[in-house]
Image (cartoon, rainbow, N blue to C red):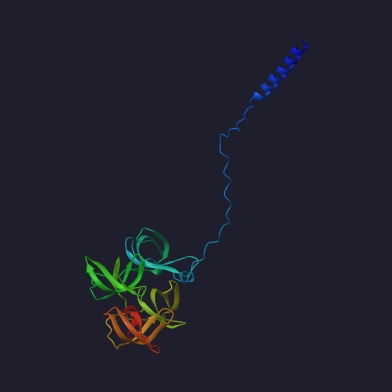
Length: 286
C-alpha cells in the first residue's frame, strides 16, 4: 500500500505540472484608443521680407496719365521689382487708374500698376503687304522685326531671325517699323562697344528709356539717340553697317545674298570670312 501512495503522489505532481504548462498566457492589452489625431504643430514663423525695390529705370519715369482705354491693345514695358530687367510685349488694357494700368497678356495673366509712361498704343498694320518690313508680336516672340511673307484675313505672317536661322510665324499683331526717335522705334545709342541698337520704350523730357538685347532697360540722353532705318533690299557689293550683340555696329560689305531681302553674308572690315546677318541687323548708314 505504501508503494501505491507514492505512485499517486508522483502522478498528482505530473498532472499539476501539465496543468501549469498547458495554461495559455493572456495577450497584451490593446493600445489605448485615440479618438482624435495629435494636434498639428504650428508652421514656423516667417520673418517679414522687405519689399523688393522698383528698378531704377521705372522709378525714374515721370508720372503720366494712361492714354489708352480699357480694351485697347498696347505695347508696354513692365518693371520687374528687384531687377533692371523688364518684360516687353503686346497687352490688352484691363483697367486704368490714373497714371497706371492693369494689363492682360495673351493667356490671361494680369500685370498691375504698369506706369503710363511705359504704355504706348499699338500701331495700325492694316496696310502691310508682302515684302514690307514690320515689327511683330506673337507668343514667345515679343520683339520681332521681320519680312511680311503672307497677309490673309488681316493676319500677317513674318519671316525673321530666330537663333541665327530663318523662322516664319503668324503674328498676333504686326505693324510698320516706326521711324525717328519715338517710342517703339529702333534707335542707336552709345555703349561701351560703340554704337548699339535698342528699342525705345519711353521718351520723357530729356531722357530715353531703351529695352536692350539682354532684356534690361537703360536710360540715355535723348539728344544722343539716333533713329536707324532697318530695311531689306541690299545687293551684293553694298556697303553696310552690320550689328552684332557684344560688338555693336561694324562696317562691312554684302558678299552674298543668301535669301533676297532677308539674309546676307557680310564681310566685316578686318575679317577674312563673311558672317551671316539678317536685314534687321543691317543699316545703310548710322
